[in-house]
Amino acid sequence: MEVIIIIALIVGIGIGFGITYWLLQQRIVEQQRDYSQQTVQTVSELEKSYESRMRETIASLQTAYQVNPDSSSKQLPAGSEQMFQASFDSCQQACQNQLAENNQQLQIAIESLQASYEQQLSETLVQLREQQESFLAEIRQQLSSPEIQELSSENE
Image (cartoon, rainbow, N blue to C red; front, side, top):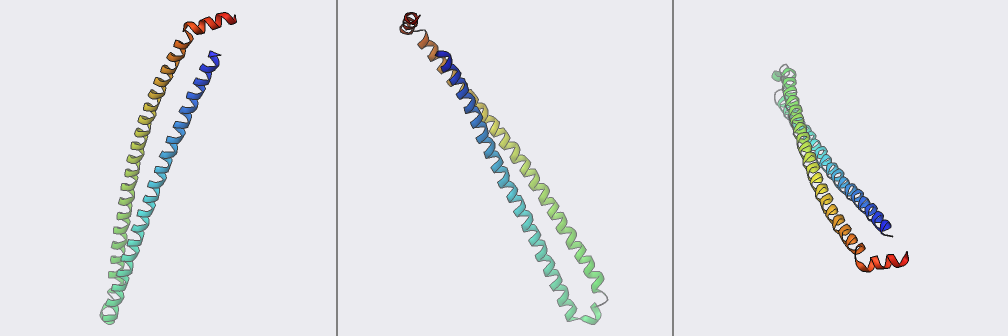
């Protein structure tokens, strides 16, 4: 009978560890998903900003061409190409920098979450071990009590 209780206790502790591990893993996955969504949103905002700047540049060039079409017709293509290229390069660099920064922040967040998870798991393991030892000590004490020894000797 005592062996069954001890086995049930060990199985219960194992299940507790498994559930705790699974719940913490789910929390980490959810936090990673949220951070990835934030990164995608930031990249999308950068792309919209780039598109807006390009529209402004095109509108500015169209206005300049309409104001003085004869004198700027020869200069507009070369100047606009350089301006477009410079604008494109700067936006592309800004996007790459933001993406690198977001990736670095994501990596730091993942490492932080892993450390936190490992800390929580370690604390939970220590608590469960203490509870197990306490419970086993209580069972041993109950098993060694004279009344139980008396009952077991009567049953034999």
